[in-house]
Image 1 (tube, rainbow, N blue to C red):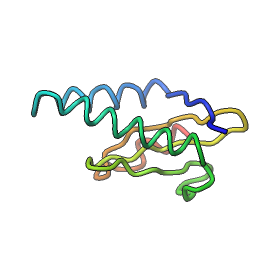
Image 2 (spheres, rainbow, N blue to C red):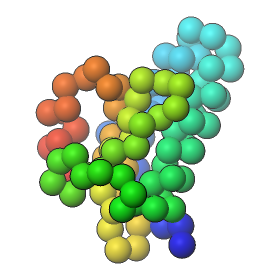
Image 3 (cartoon, rainbow, N blue to C red):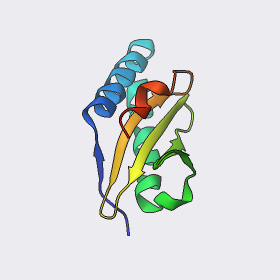
Image 4 (spheres, helix red, strand yellow):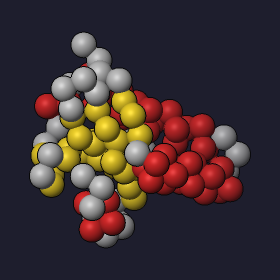
Amino acid sequence: MTLPAVFRRAARREFEEAALWYEDRRRGLAAEFKAEVDRAVMLAAETPQRFALIYRQARCVRVRRFPYSVLFVAESARIVVLAVFHVRRDPIVWRSRG
């Protein structure tokens, strides 16, 4: 069973800002980025326990083709996306969200 996914406001903002950055680099790249993030979220929603715990209850899915990870918490009836996070950023930024 695939769980519904909800994004925290900060995660949605990071996602949109990153997409805009990619679109500024090359037309159409934002759509490719969004598709890969959506794919990562879908994987998390389908089998959340498959992904390793990285901090408290937070789990991580790497985004293909882009240096981003989707950080999420699996709840009983949904997954909560805490961050769409560039892998070189300091993780202390998203840890306060979990």
